[in-house]
Amino acid sequence: MSHSSDAPDHAVRAVTAGRPPELLPVGGGVHLRRRGSADAAALNAAVIANLAHLRPWMPWAQHVPTLAESEQIAARGVEAWEEGTDFLYLLGLDADPAAMVGAFGLHSRIGPGALEIGYWVHHEHTGRGLATAAARALTGAALALPGITRVEIHCDESNAASAAVPRKLGYLLDRIDEEAPTAPAETGRKMVWLTRG
Image (cartoon, rainbow, N blue to C red; front, side, top):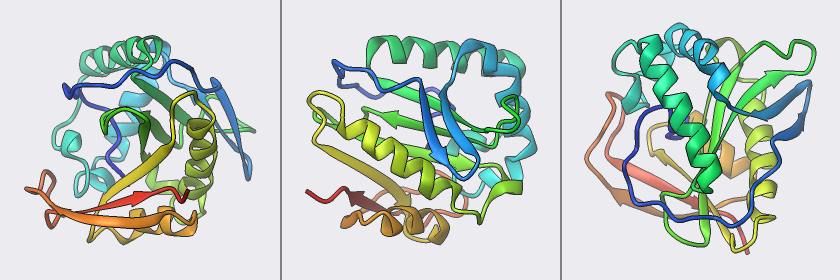
């Protein structure tokens, strides 16, 4: 799991001129689709069902979200897409479009010319390569946007499952930043992975 914005983030955002596709085929029976306001209840239920899975790594998963909070987060996500600062997706099953098996995003919180991929996958669907496949699709979509020359994935050094995603995709480990831990399992050593090129 890489820090995905399912909670408010008040960092200064760069603006991207283009927009990625609202539907991205991933393969393996799954797809990414743009997250909208109508997804708030499903996202709320998925987060609650995965709190034990998410709490070790996600600062925003330390309390049970109310439906009202999820509705506010979903609305902010729609605004961010329109503003060109963040592009939030749900990972869905091709055979069951209503199913939500993960949340992914392209985030402009790392400055101009770059986007960071954040993600988490439902605990019942981990270990199948879904995060890697979805991050591959998002990497291509991000690099196709005007002005985007770099994609990053950030994760704590102790989060081996999350670090496996950029490693499998051929990202380079650029550095390890020392930061105060924000979630219970974090060491405070944040790995910063970059696309090659």
